[in-house]
Image 1 (tube, one colour):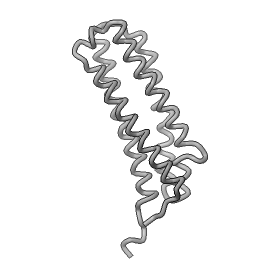
Image 2: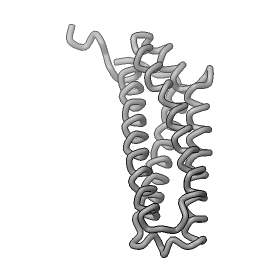
Image 3: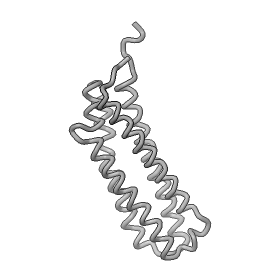
Image 4: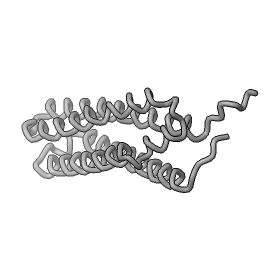
Length: 156
């Protein structure tokens, strides 16, 4: 079994905590966007939706920066298991497009107006984004599991 240092354990706990917070934010935004009639699609509703999306965008940018930092969880995982380099690079390359998609969604919401059809499209677009982000976070979790819990010699 692979051993982990206290700093790697702390980093792992932080990532798990951040992933829980991200999942909670996704659920909150989905619930808001899925309200019947979009809470009337009034200015207050738009403000709430934008506030939640902007908060998620900030949290994701910080989360991604911590993961990619020289002392971040990706560097720690690669130090533990260099064989995971391709997987780490593939996941890391998703950060920019995910952030860009969320920022574009926020910008587009300001131009959406109050029409129910427009908000239905916003909700569909966000659900698609949320599923992509959840898949991304699961891939990160698999990398950490492979780096810290896989024992390559256990079958010997």
